[in-house]
Image (tube, rainbow, N blue to C red; front, side, top):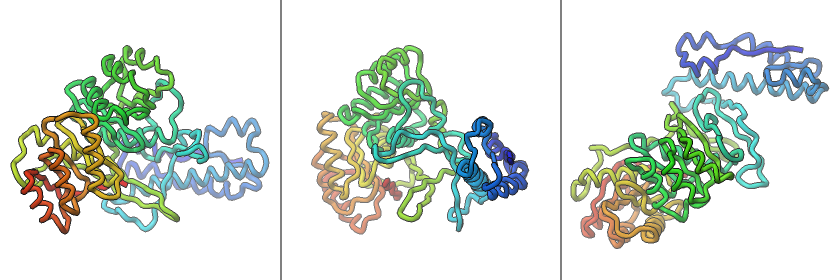
Length: 412
């Protein structure tokens, strides 16, 4: 039997060790002798995980299959170990190395995947100290595959709003209500008001601790999960009455990942890209028409941030505080505009400082005509269409002011 543990390289990463000091934590001999032993699994038992010690002593890994499973664990462990070393040694400018590998640690075996007939497991990435795995479930059942996807979408949207109390509701990976407020309870109230129908059965994410007043608003709905930095005692008492509601306390949920990459599976491979970044108001943006006042800028910035987190084609209508109508996942832009306007008219009467954001350019002027008919006088979009001149002309003729950002925010 061979038992071995590697130098704690990942733990050193978590502690912020860098440069040559971090290199000293790279184990050379450990992976070599463990791999050599694991290769001889027909006659050797090799143990790399302390959690397996008791099982080995109790005879759970006796026989060829048991030794083979332990050997597989050794090779997975050393591969994961080396993948983190490669990641940390790679220059930040090296976005497309010829070979890549990723390591992960099991967080939980999920009940099933996106649908009951699918199997699923939740892993955390090696080298990532923060993440959903740090959220503490203080009430409710274990998280499902779909819960995790929606929680991630909610938190990614919420992180656009660092400065003020904010609340985001999400269904099927799309925000359905986004709001900021002077207090946490005002943000919650406005987020629920944004689309009181779609939030049913959804996920709520908040960037401030949940207090009694916020909990009273949330308790009136059927929700799957609420994630927040904390919950006060009164909030826990109120929300505790809803036994099936999952409550997650995640103190560092507003902390963005450094050097974050997004990975998507495709048939026979995967794609890797850097994370998107959404700009706040910039003086480099081109304004066509009137100069926006401060209130209009706030509304345009909120709509722009929300729109970047909707599935394309995406349209977000908002005011200075919350979303009014969201259109997403449409195969043409004018349908996304129509969807957002229908949702706005369904739930809201005339609102001041109503603006509209589009995640990509308007290919034709038809969207501007529909926007004008809805009484919206401010639009923010990337620009860049072959027919920009036609779109700009339509805006001028119909009295619609437009901001061109020069940056697209597709979400697939």
